[in-house]
Length: 146
Image 1 (cartoon, rainbow, N blue to C red):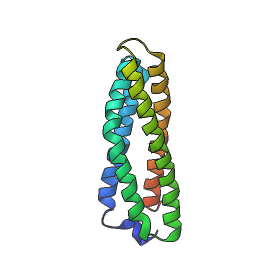
Image 2 (image 1 turned 120 degrees about the vertical axis):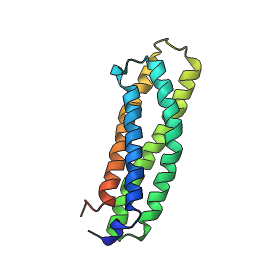
Image 3 (image 1 turned 180 degrees about the vertical axis):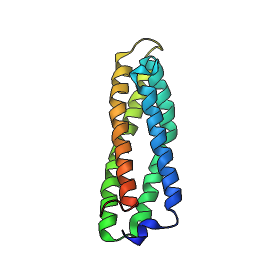
């Protein structure tokens, strides 16, 4: 394991990382069909949560890229691969957020809007992909991949 993976900022990283994973899981819970919410209500709650999450997640990914610059070449390359995957999912979530805003502005609450249901269905796996990418970053960060 390379010593640069164990910098003093590791604890701060782990705390931030866990908060993002937890927030993603909370949003997934809002979208779960068993949550008892209508598709419109679930999407409204998810939009509010995503509006708070995505800007800070974007900053976090930028910071992770900077922090990995002094790593050995192999570690830096692995981290950049995972960061690129996360950035791609972030862009996808931003597009979905814009679509959700449009759907919500055009739909009536409680209408059982099929577009709201479709977005809810698509957001869940996209959030799961983002969470997986964050977990892969954590493995690289802690040196779990040799």
